[in-house]
Length: 209
Image 1 (tube, rainbow, N blue to C red):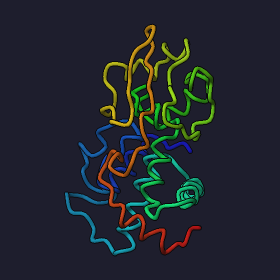
Image 2: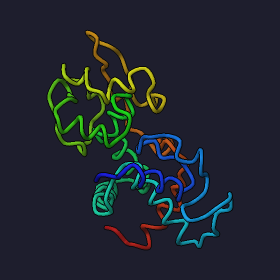
Image 3: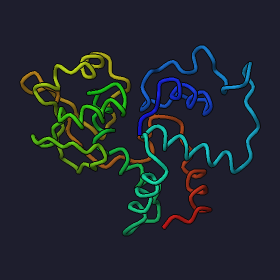
Image 4: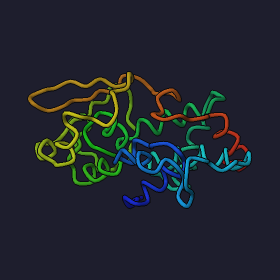
């Protein structure tokens, strides 16, 4: 799912916060109000709109279609445990495109997908060209020889978009960054303000099974 630059700015302005996964920080610097409005006043929201907004945050940050998000919700609801939203975040954060972004190998999730599709990202020493692949604990992520010289990586090599989360470790081996998945992430690892309760209520009404 590609999102144009101007759309990325509008999405963040409408939601009133920056979504790191979209890249290009500064969406709210010049115009900290929704598109079509002037000044700093934000519209009053209905309960439904508040729940929808939380869903949109997650969907746009991870660059998912509604169908893709519901697929991961179904996966999260399988098995034991009642906190499926926490399990959902654990799945989304462990997607290869997101892991590559969180490791600081790419400036955005979209650029991570480009690098993955071109075979520049290696998982346990092998090319994986599917950004939606969910990694497991102890999986290792690094760059191919070409990936080390890719412009996406060079842009963020010394200034990653986000700090490294505690469920990942990043080292260097032979001049290449090597990331390791240490644990399954949880809701607190979502890199922006997120109300899990409102998100859960939105999909409770949708009855996604």
